Amino acid sequence: MRRIDRELETIALTDTSWRVCDASLPDDDGTRLLAYVEQVDDHIETLWMWPLVGECTRFDSLDTALGAILDRLTARRVLPEAS
Image 1 (cartoon, rainbow, N blue to C red):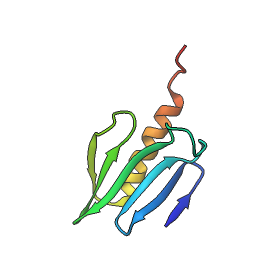
Image 2: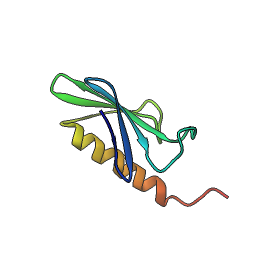
Image 3: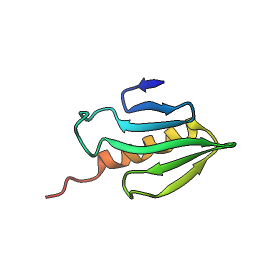
Image 4: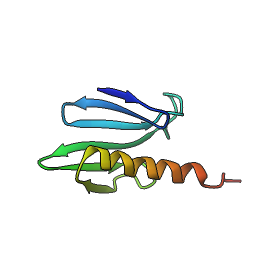
């Protein structure tokens, strides 16, 4: 599965794991990768790649995880640019 909407690009790595990127950035931008998500038993584990690489969070569903990733992406876009 490869799903691209206006905000997120979700790419299946296996039947139970996905890479989620900022769809507005070019493929060669290192800040494009937002998180890895994986189905584990009855939940989704998310390994964040932004803002804190290595932070892990559990969610009840893929849709809930994608919603949380989108929330962080939205927050990143409203942060003031570094001078």
